[in-house]
Image 1 (cartoon, rainbow, N blue to C red):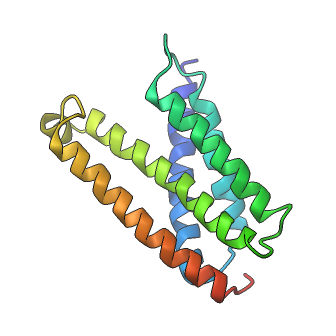
Image 2: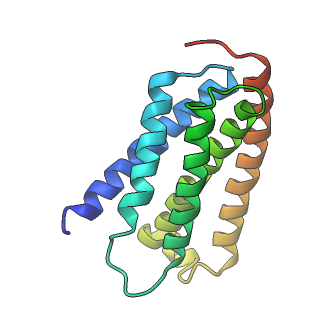
Length: 159
């Protein structure tokens, strides 16, 4: 069990990094097949590897994990079996970026837990600095998701 947390964190970092590469591709109308597979796979592994981490009760992280798995399954179906055909292209973009948003949401939570300066600003994560940070992240993701869905739908370039 001691190796699980560092492995979970490492997979999360891969998911975040590859997710931002995929986001950049979506904004340019590019599929980026290899990066997409890495993003979807590592993000799914991140969600799944979080469940066995020690906890004595249902936690918000478990709920985020379940939502992430459901969203990722839809993204994977839209991307692979449905081949981005018709409405599946937009469904893929939205679900993939929701999955990336959930990873970033958790990263912000972890930052407020682990970075002393942020912990001092919001020790219980119910203080305004935490809420403002999460609202900014949410607003940015809503904006880029709308833009990416429009751009990916109208300018698909195979790469």
